[in-house]
Length: 279
Ligand SMILES: [Fe+2]
Image (tube, rainbow, N blue to C red):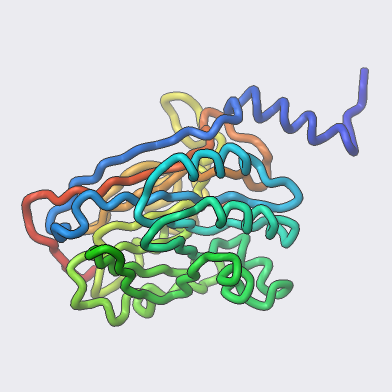
């Protein structure tokens, strides 16, 4: 019997991941029909990438950059856990170079990114020079080619860094609002300006799932979120929420019946008016 340890452990991990999720990125393509979406935004395409967990290993980086260069989107959204350690910064830069979009590449922090704050001294000074635009509990309007999109980004709630009210402040007059969040738990926060569309990650789709049963554990502490909102499309009040399974892993380097995911979303105008009831 051979004892596996040290340098042989990564090989074991590779084997385990291959057996459990076949290691290939899955492209999820969604078309969302959204009442009240302004005509100028009809057809807007968003690329969504989340939970990369780049560290000493940058899993799926080659496949990911090849895919991002092959799709055409108007905006890239990276919803946190980009980094597992500072060793992942070169991979983050390589990824950024492959995220081309006229409305920009936008980033919100995840719990793992925030763990590195004492070392990095801040995410904005590190990520903005390599091409990300960081939304730290703040909102803005991005415009290109006659398209005007209000978007906001909220920090991660794991250490109570989220401030949704601050994130959406000043965007009250905008007819449509996209919110980027690491954790889908933030959609349970009270706000006078609910976003029309929320893109989130954090859950890894549960990471370990069983057929017909789904994820064994939820990865958000928010009551009512957990296993139920581990992956997929949801409605919370008047907000449409999409939770991606993301790309990386945490705690255990395996995915079981929960393959890594990259996502494109195409927004289409649907009949009806935007409702902005406070919650
Ligand atoms: Fe994550």
